[in-house]
Image 1: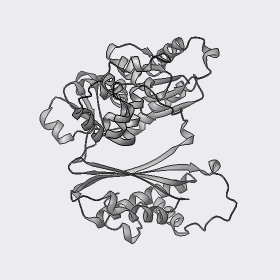
Image 2 (image 1 turned 90 degrees about the vertical axis):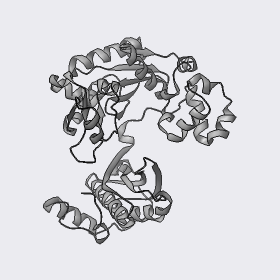
Image 3 (image 1 turned 90 degrees about the horizontal axis):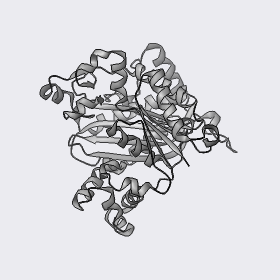
Image 4 (image 1 turned 135 degrees about the vertical axis):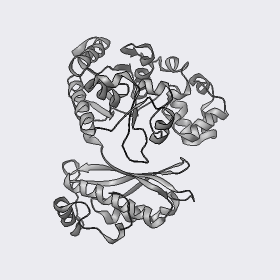
Length: 385
């Protein structure tokens, strides 16, 4: 497998500065205007002075008065992202948009068409800059993990391309800091690496696989494999894994079970309404919970494929005390579904269960009169709009 990873550094702030060059004169952050807002994106010069994504905007205003703060423009970012995707799909039919400014491209079998894939990567970079004015770097490697790291690392040298040949992945990764690995974002792994003084990837490579498994279980085994550049994940086009997501930030933080459960039901209602609109269904959900002291809880749930609220909400509440198990107040709640559209589903041999007859009618009322026109009783104490 040969993978390109296209990396547009600080995509959101770069788009804003292209549309308004005056914004390039000062460090720029993107954040909502609400009182409890956090930084959504920060420009490279803002990161250099210590401002980064997730920082409370009140803190930024107090200690960095020279920074320009701009309200997000989601439609603008979506348009720019679509332009980039349209261009990338001219180079390969197998494209996975990971996030804004990060796209994985499977170039396996494309050598006959392009000859030298390095020239193809440079051509992609040139056309992107010509058509969208967005600067980017490209990582060329045998898998998604190494190509992602290569594209990020080459940004330091202001070069457009970094190539990692098959078999050289461990040598390429060895001198890099452990921060380059995706596991760095997990607090438990960061703590383990600090305690074991594993500051560079070569230090992780030097440890036996069994020792990493003993120290951190399955996460340690995966960390060791990633340190050697092993990543079997394929490049997956978006139609294979549509994700619907909703989130809410509590104002103020709360540990009231009624409020948390009602807000959770409102998020379930919102996502189920979207499932019905998109003629899709789901059999899995992912829940993320953030407490006041910045401790996170992540949980995954599986259930019978459905697009109605009752089954999903009941499944989430059955284990409520296991994922909301601390006395600390809750600050943030997010819920996402892995959705499958009707034309992607395998037909059942047996009669399908009778759908919820009430939900489609509620969807129509809310669409016509607003989201607060009618509510279920269990959602009355929720804070989500």
